[in-house]
Image 1 (tube, rainbow, N blue to C red):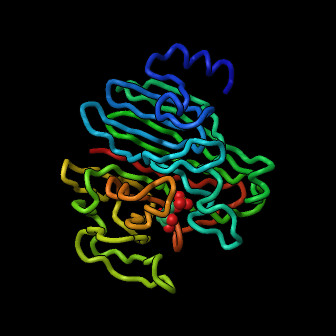
Image 2: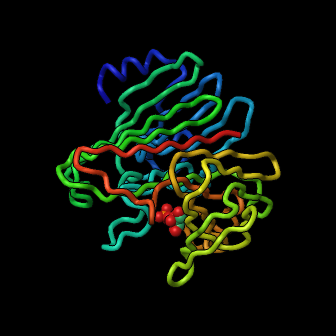
Length: 298
Ligand code: TA6
């Protein structure tokens, strides 16, 4: 971080740095976290991945699920919160790391601002490196603007600084905290076509009504409305985005096989992820820009 930014941060009592070991335990040295506490809400961001780990609107409940078994180690994806999956989503045809390298790379904090309504804005950036160029042959700047207010707003800007078009897909892979997945409905997908990622050939079906997961589920909904509402026994979570897809996932009994989830822990979350994937992957022209937003609120 630039020295002047570190000095600026030191003058903003609403923001502070700590280690993941201080907040969540685990092995030293852990990962650096930025904590934001405003009168409108609070958030925690890991600099690895520009990864939101917590968002609590003032007087409200935690909207993000973070696995009790999450591991905070350099280069390892953190289980929970909002991993940023890009510049590709899911498995890579050539066996490169699933969901891309943005979530396991160290981002820089490059701007902080207290807005007139008391919301706090933080801007994080990642640009190409020798390691990224070995995986994705494009010079780039990824920029994530995080605004912590009564709602959590994310604005992603991806600049292709190379001289060739870049094939790109992305998702805000939100793990949303619910009291019990068995008593949770996902509203806002009725009538949408979805790709069932679990079945051979990835067949497409039409969603009828609200979705209530009852088993391992992994689907990509296409051409979705701007908003989904997750209705659970203690309230609701609204997810809004200008992207075209909603990915819905819960590992159910497979949680037991995932060391950083654990048996039975699948009941505490639903992944309702907004992004542009599959049919909506984009080609960002040389020098071109891709933008996407997502917000979460109660
Ligand atoms: O978004 C759903 C998904 O792509 C699933 O297929 C599932 O594997 C999940 O993400 C988690 O992926 P990860 O690489 O974080 O274990």
